[in-house]
Image (cartoon, rainbow, N blue to C red; front, side, top):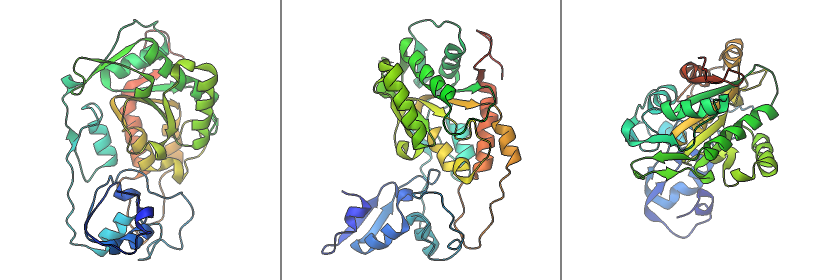
Length: 332
């Protein structure tokens, strides 16, 4: 067992089989370095998540058979048209409340369903709330599996301190109210701990600022995972709090529209996902329609980022709690 980079250093052995996990995270050059070590290989991976590359200008390579920005799976499928492909039709991580949105928005060609039933997973609170917007948003997420905590529209750039405080305030209330989760693994109930919560961001600098605020002002949240979508891939948590990649932005770049980034952020949870964002994202999307050029021969994305973002926003419209709403009221 080892990483592709380590296998690439082996020169004196050969194996009849290889199982390559997270295959969509393998770069094509690593496949070239390791393919000669095995007679057969089983590639296991998730096509809806992030590519193993940074977003840069690659026009001169796109469409070429040796495009270095292709993943290992794209190269494999492009050169083996008759290769058998098997889809896993069940998600054991996502609850039934999450599967319809995630499946439709990010996996339009490989739909799946939840392995658990609605009655299997619950989220309740031992302590009553104070009828604040923060309490309202966690209660709504507990009932439905989703919630959008919407801040007033404003262009803030990457570092939105008000949004950072909102994210940490939501995590604080989840623990202060002694949330209890039940599922097929813990039918007797599990008291939510800091390690059960993840806070997801698009940028490393955002994660860094949130960690700094947590350390200074929220010592009770020590143990909460705060990281980027890239680092959260493959992880699983009971609850996730997501800072929307397009929140507070004045543009919609390819990086922030990447379907895989939003997919990872909104699909790490077993019980509920709470999205924090400033108002105006739908208008931002409409002002920046998807117009990426098509390159003959280039591997196509599984899901279009512009459409996926609109699909997620449309779903969250019915799960919106405004940060400055009157206590006890929810406006969709």
